[in-house]
Image (tube, rainbow, N blue to C red; front, side, top):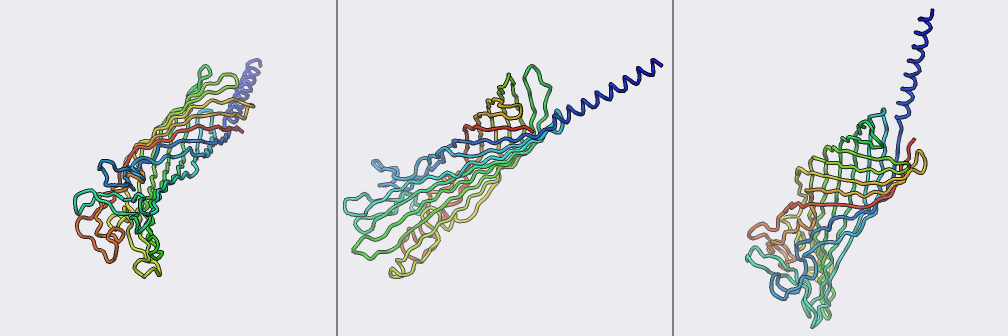
Length: 377
């Protein structure tokens, strides 16, 4: 009798232990949501080609008035959203999305075209003559000129994966991470010019526009680790991730001249080709390259309640293979194909097909600070 009672008690105890284990597992299967406000800085966009000068490029005393450097990208505000769901006390599903607001900047230069003013020149390498040359954007006293450079960019990304928790030890927690990543950087770079006649000549229109728009899309697998340490209400954590995959790169090149010089100052006509975007490189050009994207993040959090934590973070992201629009401008020009250079239609390419679509890549980084709130349910 005593044995049967003891067996019944043991069975009840085991049943209670199983229920407790199930309850614990149920408690671990929680949903967490977090939102962060971002302020990130990005690597300046290169613009190595001189766009406007006051003399022959490379000649002593010539000043570069536009281009020939970098476009400074201001700090960009953004948002990051993340969610996590614990399937059990070891395995979690995780996902996040972030974006930076579009940033834009511009620079311009102009000349009145009056006697004594500085003539604006567009320097290029003339492949038909095999030497440096220029074309006038303003020419005193006949016509005035202006040039404007505009740039914009935006960055966004998406991650989805799993986290596998290793056993905790002394307040330390370590998760192994794995999943997929998408990252997109889009940038637009345009150069516009205007060269109308000065009085007493009749008012006319002579306007060009060259645009180089790049798009980089990374698709790849990602591995990483996340470590955290809990001390009272404080939580310190660090994340390191490495993405390996393909970077799909595309550049759209467009150029045109709008003028009414050939209709006796009447209706405007549009001709293909500006100054750097000409029939030989106009169009959409793409390629795919292997790319590596590492990212690190450091965070300090404070638990306001058992379910709500505020935190501040620093993040750094790097990409080794990006198309930046300024690097796509080829200043080796065959001017015979463009009304912008020749000055009147018709035109026909004579000689080598330059400029070409270069598809030059360079490195890119973004880093920044964030503050956020994490809530667990």
